[in-house]
Length: 266
Length: 150
Image 1 (cartoon, each protein chain N blue to C red):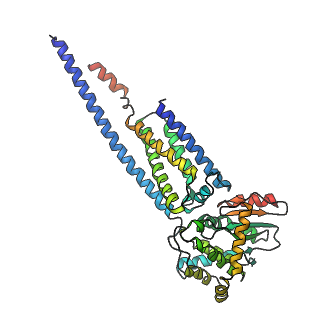
Image 2 (spheres, rainbow over the protein chains, first blue to last red; image 1 turned 180 degrees about the horizontal axis):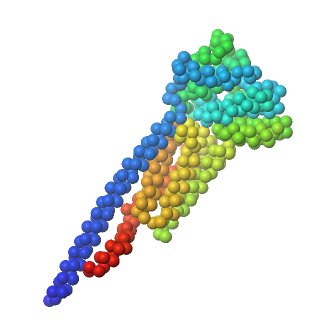
Image 3 (spheres, each protein chain N blue to C red; image 1 turned 90 degrees about the vertical axis):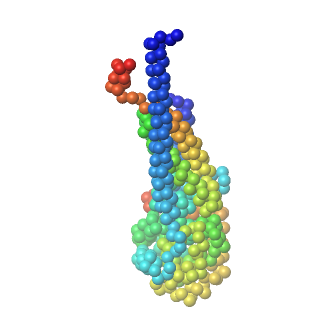
């Protein structure tokens, strides 16, 4: 028979075990509550990231005549004012350095480049006559989008504006008003709307020129040239100067990267 | 250091390496090495490759650095919970990007997919580490009082 002391010790041990068990279950409950709170907070952060990420391109392009379209047209006109243009070349033909961009007008990274480093390049180096900028076509985002067949038509629309020496106005406006790459926003009315926003463009001349087979042939030649050079992504930028040609640059790089390449070939 | 934590550290370092590489190629203007043709380039040049102008590769790099810091911090419930929170965010955003790859871009970037898998395993390990972690060490004075009354 257990002594009274032993009984007391056994009861004490039992009590301690119960306390430990209660403490453990309370701790697990608290941990699960904390886990729930962290999951909720994390979901909130992810939702914010998703919402901001989805805002990368407008679901639909701005309508011609809207305040946004007017503002884009004003910005583009001011950027290109006084710079000579011919076809898809922007800048003086005697500029020592040629920067060729292989782009897709629906490509969001081309848009980032256009609105960032390229605009800086235009307002400084191109305007100063040091660099001439040439645009060539390479399907990427459009080819993966909902309407791949629109590529030659949209690129030829810019080339048609180029026949009136306003090609870069069209290219820049397209990028400024670009829609989301997973929507089929490039329609005849979108392309026509861009043309109507370009001051000095003869709309009827542009309208008949844009279906010219010569222009769609030019788009195909650009694609073939890109393929021959091994380019498969946009924007791909080729910098060529009197000394040499720099390694092709891919993506929406910053102005410093373009400047370094220009310096290396000058 | 437990086996679980060592595994997490190794995975985090691999994920960090991928994020550093993708951030580097983004800013250097070069194409990513890719065995699946143009898939990586398609993903890297899509509109979902940035969040408000910040490359997702850079966000990933920051995330992995945060997880690494959480793992290297002194063991506590707080550090384990913080690590778990970061991995849940990582899995959530990786999941969204994978959805975009499959249904919007129609191309899968192998670097991104590897990172998504690493992040998912890290989240699983973090849950086990948090829920199965040791109880917090009681404060020293309380322990002395408890001993003296027994």
